[in-house]
Amino acid sequence: MAKGYRVAAFGGPEVMVWESLDLGELAPGDVRVRVGASGINFAETRMRAGDYSGQELPFVMGMEVAGIIESVGAGVTGFNEGDRVFGRARGAHAEVVDCDPDHLMLLPDNLSFVQGAAIPVGWLTAWHALYTVGRMKAGDRILVEAVGGSVGSAALALAKQAGCWALGTASRDDKLAHATSLGCDAVVNYTRDSVSEQVAALTDGQGMDIGLMTIGDATADELIDSMGMDGRVVMFGSTGGRDITFNLRIGILNIQLLSMSISTSPAFMTQTMPDFRARALPLFASGELVPVVDTVLPMSELVRAHEMVDERTHFGKVILVNDQ
Image (cartoon, rainbow, N blue to C red; front, side, top):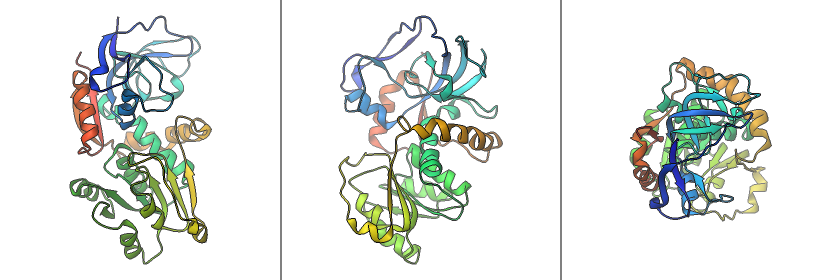
């Protein structure tokens, strides 16, 4: 019987218990994956604590997986036993997880399970934000908040690959230095400098075409003030406060405020997933896009992984590999 990190009551890291899971028979239309690696996300700390909307008890921790298909349910096509796959899957902090194949992709041969587990949530969120919602095109000026995070580091890579000018923000200079080494054209420490003033100076007052708002209240005013004519603000996070206010002067610049969630957007499955499969996967396979991994920990150190997320000192992803 497989084991995983089950949560029966909301609380601190101690509520995540490694115990036997009763997966039962594989349901028709699903595939069962032997977990090689799984990624850590900020949202999981909120799920564990009980302040993630819609999360019910009990549940198994984890949101993304890379591994090998053990069995294929009735009616599934395009996947076979033994395939190396990666994708979004609830309950991935375990030895085995049952997945909806619509959310899985074949893992390119050049990528390890660790690299594969670093892609599903961060890169798909960034792709949805920039392409599906933000309508990014070559030459756009892109503002990436929290550029050292899972989504931010992916968004930076995607913006540069698309031929855009990118400005990244963070609260730590070491993260900004790392972003610069990855090709970020300009960086701003938002705890020390005015993002909007820096943007005005760097763009000759033209402002940004797309702004990725993932922090929330703490930085919303500065991000909106950084936008240019017909700018698109794409909102998908709230690490710095969920309630924001904005000046209706945004109408003068025709700024669009666009909110999104890859978990609920109808366009995610109809547009983002097919687009990602068609355009992003070949770029990973060729090495033009490379997953950003900061730290690899054994699955037994899930508590430490959550501590790292809370400390916010890492750049890119923290990944767990199965050692149990």
